[in-house]
Length: 489
Image 1 (cartoon, rainbow, N blue to C red):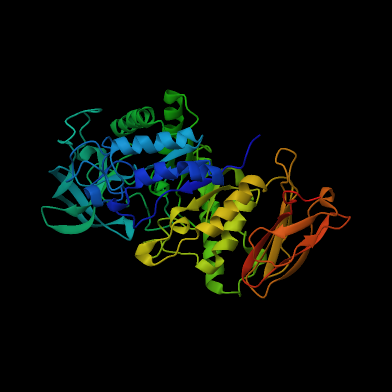
Image 2 (cartoon, rainbow, N blue to C red):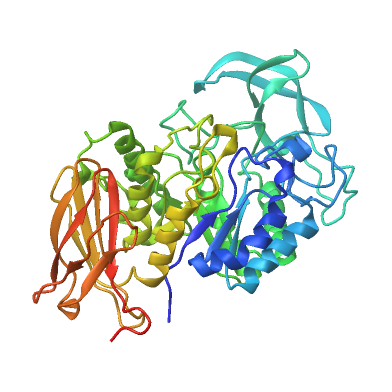
């Protein structure tokens, strides 16, 4: 029997070292598995330029997973390598997959400055040079003295990068492209003219030495940790051909299927589909357009037309490659991509990603456990209910009733593999209402209850397999077959 897949992003941006995340993750593994979580996306596990204070996105040393005394600490923000491996083992014991966050666009915190010839460019129009070649001081030499060559003796220098945003010689922040280098072509060009450069020392993905070293590292990482897949950071800033070739090669060398999902941050599904074509469908993508629909609806407070809540979403055109989410570490309050879905709409948004047929849903740690830094309360009780319903009930043929601007619904008929599966969902961002929906003749004469506990009265399915399912104001009701209690005649 095959249960629904469900991912959890097991971190949020404001977590501190005091959280001891790897230990917490290991302790949570069994509970999450029982709720139906089948995979976890863990944060970057390697040493950040900010050491124990860094989130892992300011990549310093890809080979230091909390093992070497570098950047002021042995442990990363999340713990030591030993604790990281123990967390992965704990998830594997529960038959859950582990996806590692992979950040390959840039490096930061170099060990030495190199003198490099570079031209200055307009940071908002990267094709416009504003100053001719001059010698700058670039933080581009990475020797990793704390690791002393263990696992890899590769040393990074300026030839492995395209550009940087700091001149140590002139003590000036600006965008510099190194002489003889070009910004990559197959990246997002709808912003800043060319969005190859993002931050730090920008890796030159057209350099064969860079490609070979990253493939070598990935094979080592997979064998060292046993991870089952990757979340690929900032893919719109990396040439599409790189991940097309990289993922194919790493799968070939490791013999592992390796699930991969890329973060291509754009509201336009056409852009996402184009990228998927460019990488030959080697990875999935997060459904960013659907997230923005949720965000916009939550901000509209009832004036959004729910009939269009799925419009423009990746799940409509490529559901197999769509990873759906409500919020993540980038969209939470205070972050550069802040587009937080307001709390009142969270139950409805999660019902959409968890209880529909399309997409591979991802639950956010910041929603599940809360974000104390931003005074965001945990939604564990609500999410526990929806995750259990997904695991037990969300199967079978789907029927949509997107026929009212403030009240929509759908049903799932269930299947023979999952006992008592099948459900009906009604959600409203207005006064509520009742929807007559078909759920299947096999349920004729049976009573259904609202598993969310929002609707007070049970309903009965008629001889045609239809029911009058209702929902209260600004809420969601998930109707499931009412099972007999122990001892019932």
